[in-house]
Image (cartoon, rainbow, N blue to C red; front, side, top):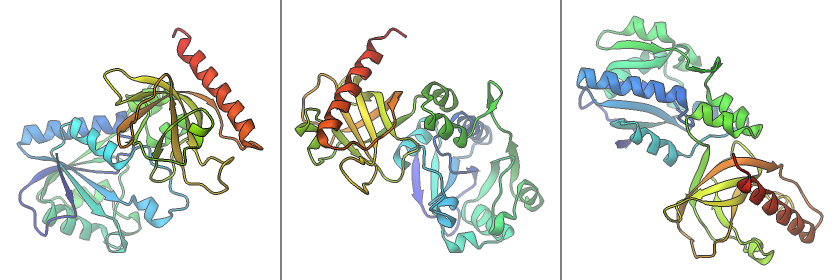
Length: 306
C-alpha cells in the first residue's frame, strides 16, 4: 500500500475512493473497505482511502475528542491487510475546514484525487459547517459515481467506534472483540522506564502511548512478538497516580516467567480481562501488595478453563 502524505496538485489518474477516519477498523469499516476493493477491481482502478490527521473533532475540540482506538501505524497496517492500494493522509487545518462543500468536491475529490467512483457512509457530512452530504455529492457528480453504505449491525447492534469505546470502558472485551472482529490490542516498542517495577520485584515492559487510551486499569493480557507463541502477563494502563501526580498515560506489562532484554522490541498487548480500576495507594509497600494480588488474580484467570 502506498502511503501519501498530502495530495498531488493534479491527480495522476482515476481512483476508487472512500473517505473516513476508520478508528479501530471495526467490522463496519471492514465491510466498507471490502466493498471499496471489490468495486476497484471491477472498474480496474486503484483503491484509495482519504483520511484526515488530526481528526476534525480533534481539530475543533481537542479537549472533548474521544480517545483513539488504534494508533496510526496499527490502522495503516490493517488497511494494507485489507488490500487497499493507496492511503492519502490530508492534514486537517483551517484551510480544509473552511472549504465549501462544492469547493471540496471540485478541488480535492475531482482535481487532486481524480475520483471516478466514491463510497461514503449514508450519514457522511463534509465541508464548511458540515453542510455537504450524500445529496450534495450526487448533485455534483459529473465525472464520478457515488455509492452509499448503510450501517453494519451485529446481533441487532449498530457497529461503531463509539460502541467499541463503551465496551472497552466497561471491561467487556468479548463484546469489543465482536464489534472489532478481532481482539483489542495496543502495540508499541518497549522503552526504558524508571525501573520502579524492577525495584518492587515486578519488572515491566514499558510502552509509551501517544494520546489518551480508550481504557484504564489493570488487566490480564497476552503479549505477542516475543517468540513464536504469545506469553501471559498482567498490565497496568494509566497515569500511575501512586507514583506521579500528573503523569502521562503509560502501558506497563509484567510478563510471567520471562526475563530477557527486550528494549526496542515491538510488541502487541492483547487485552483479555479487567482485574480492577487504577487506584492511588498511600505508599509503595501498599502498591507492592496490590501488584502481588493482581499477579495472583491474573494467573488464576489464565489457569481457569474457558
